Image (tube, rainbow, N blue to C red; front, side, top):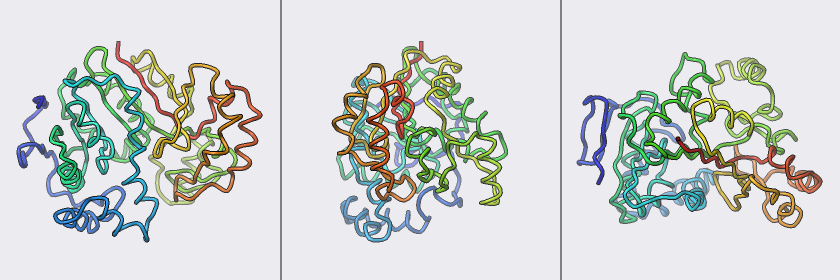
Length: 337
């Protein structure tokens, strides 16, 4: 297993493969309660992880159950030229949906802010007989890694949230700085993968709720207007921002990345059924014959979108260049040097 290089020694080593830069973390875990995390972890000691997910969430939070168990979330991996000796950093590893299957092909580092989630991922990996994973409990913004050591860095459903964990600073500046940091962490010719929503996705323009705030007719507004409305409605600052295809391209280029490729994900990067290469004119012919079989959903609650019929008709009337800017989400691959 590849030796990780850290900028400091302010960490505890747990079971030889967990490097924890966090103290006893009393913060609320991102997508579940702390009590649920403890229960999930304990149940894994005598049940299969899919059975635990079913028992805990299928009836009470089916969207979360599907997010945890749907293997399609990692389907983008076939696009990447992954070698056995590569070292891959999975930022915000969540439930291990990417780290665990990826570890069959290379060396993986699963990074999570919460030690409780790290422990869950490790138990799931053990059940799947995956031993090629190292675990780091840290906030990515804490900058714990030495530069130039990763062949691939994955931000799957993470880039839009990165500012949430650095309260007080400008969220958009944090996103730009994150890309700069990733560029430094990658080896020469290293690769960055991002899975993320498109703020100008057709379903959002038609009024579908934003995946992160749950607000309708919201995410396509300019960022200043979003911030103002969110402050009025939620009585707190908006920290989560997505962008357009054009803006993602510009942000990556400004950070030094080249050979940037976009794929339109349907129905969404979180539960991929189809990935469409946007470097050619294929989207038009694909949509005219296949779109009705890939219904989109409300990414906040998980139910099928009531706008699907309208979305289908509009897609089939558009040109390829127009469709490219309207996908609900993208898989983005960018390279260093």
